[in-house]
Length: 320
Image (cartoon, rainbow, N blue to C red; front, top):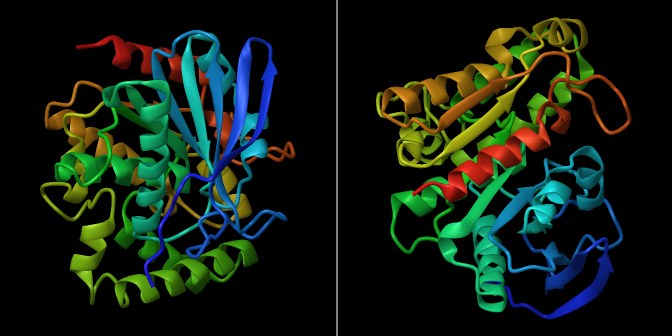
């Protein structure tokens, strides 16, 4: 059965501190589980938008990490608040789970972007998209798809940012194998089994057996001379954050550098820079990672400096 997405209604509208926040319902069904079953509205797909009282100069799209509720993202960053103060319209789509190939996620983003363009008359080339972990992956895959094939997406993002996103599915598979073989961290083993089961369903099996599927859907493929899909980011401004706290990883997950996202993140930014992308930037942080509950964790929103990120976004928006 084909699932369609239509804009239904504006659920809430609140004006506060010179900005208006709206929750717009997109669908009352969630057949692909794009918004994880962790709250009472888990079958509803929507987006929250923060609207400046002035004419918006652009749109910033912020995507949650896996399992994160939008309200929890807002507690960990100030990017959305700073953006509205600088006359951006900000969107938080209700996507925090979903699929490995990101096909229904891209369709939902297209639906949201079309609504925003038509309602607020913001040019398509004024959209910047980014997110944390899985949200960063979604932002990057959408951007790559937009650049790879004309008219495959509703718009082409002006720039993209990500906070510690996994990039290479083949590398991630190997990392999962390592976690299971070590069998010293329950959290690491359980996560790895879940990832490998998902990849087996979506790609057919291991990257050794189904290499082309992994290259086709990975954001970056270190094994490929052309970077795989990363070649479609050569002309797009890219900002990535990572915190390679290997001591924390060794003590809490028994992982080393070979298991961390930072390896592929650095490799991809290096690839893009070598290919001539002067707007590909890597930010490496130290001792900034902290979760919403205050627990130290290098894979967290907190490694992103919201003011710095907004400054970078403004620079890209103002460039020719």
